Amino acid sequence: MAVTSLGICARTSSASLSLLSSPPRSPLRVSCYCPQLSPSPIDKTLTQIQNSGVIACLRANSAEQALKAARAALSGGISVLEIVMSTPGVFEVLQQLVQENPNPALGVGTVLNVEDAKNAINSGAKFLMSPAMVKDIMVDVKCAEVLYIPGVMTPTEILSAYDTGAKIVKIQSENISPEEQQQLFYQMPYLIKRQSFKIISMKFINLQILQLCRAMRL
Image 1 (cartoon, rainbow, N blue to C red):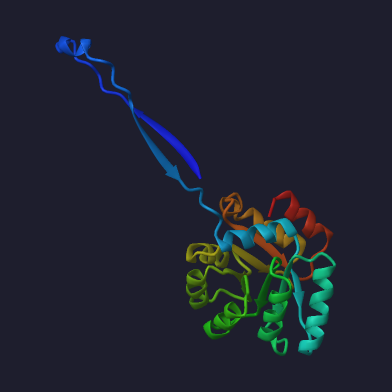
Image 2: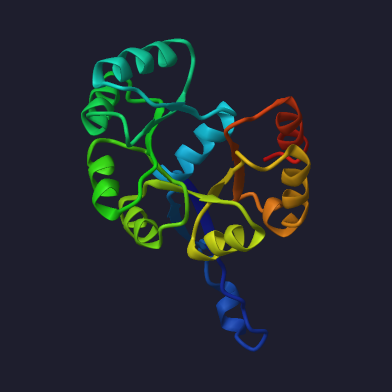
C-alpha cells in the first residue's frame, strides 16, 4: 500500500500582527492510503496468453485420452490450453486438470450457449472460445470475470466484437491466406494499436503468419 503525506499550512495575514508573537503551529499532516489495484482475472489470463504466444487446442475421443494428452502438454511447457466442447466429459476433464494445475490458463473452446459457458466456468475455466460472437455469453462471462474469445473473419465482425466488450478475438483462418490476414490486420490499425485489444490467428498457422503477428505485436 502506498502512503502519501499531505501538508496543509495556513497563511498569516499582514493585518494580524498579534499572531506573529504566537508560537508557530506545526502543519497538519494527513496520511492517505492508496491501495494498489491488482490485475483482474481477465487481465491475468490475457497476460498469460500474451506471454505464452501459443494457445494449444485439445480435441480427444475420450476423457482418458484428453487427460493424458493435456498432462503431457502441460508438463512439456504449454501454459495456455483449450479443450474443445466435443471432447467427452469435457467439464470433468477440465475440473481435474485445474485441480492438478492451478496456474496454467485452462479454457473451453467451441462454446455456443450460456449453459455450456456456465458449466465451463463452474469447472474452473479461465477463458472461453466461440467460433463466432455470442453476445449472451459475453454478458455472462463479464459477471464471472472470465475471458471470452469470439471468432471473427471480417473487419465488421472485429469491430462489432470490440464494441460489445471483447478484449481479444481470434481470426478463423482456415480459408484466409497469410496475405489476406495481413490486409485484414492493416485495415484495423486503430484497434491493433490499443494495448487493451488483441487479435490472435487460429489454425493452419505457418511461419509467415507468425512473423506477421510478431511484427505487429499481436
